[in-house]
Image 1 (cartoon, rainbow, N blue to C red):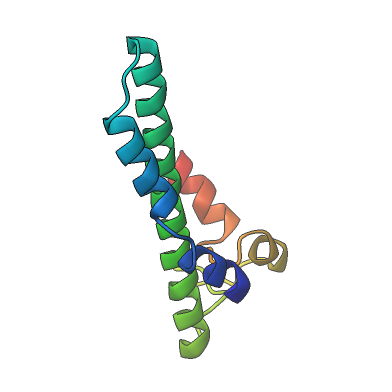
Image 2 (spheres, rainbow, N blue to C red; image 1 turned 180 degrees about the horizontal axis):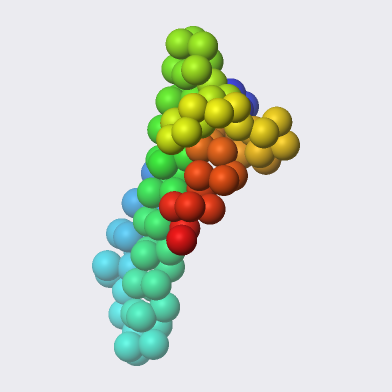
Length: 102
């Protein structure tokens, strides 16, 4: 979890900035411009996802310090070890997650 957080925290915004700048000065047909805009949109979404995961990791580390890591936020039951291995920053057990989806 720490390694993933460090990787996300260390990711640079320069590739995104470069894409925005290079697309803003591009000439070309509408398809080229649409493709460039789509690329920028995808990169923005990836950055937002990385930021959300990083925040979730930081919250999980805080829960470890508080002694509440591995306890479901919604029902208070322990979160299955397999779920924590799959998604170490999860805050809810699988039963509560499925209820949220319904």
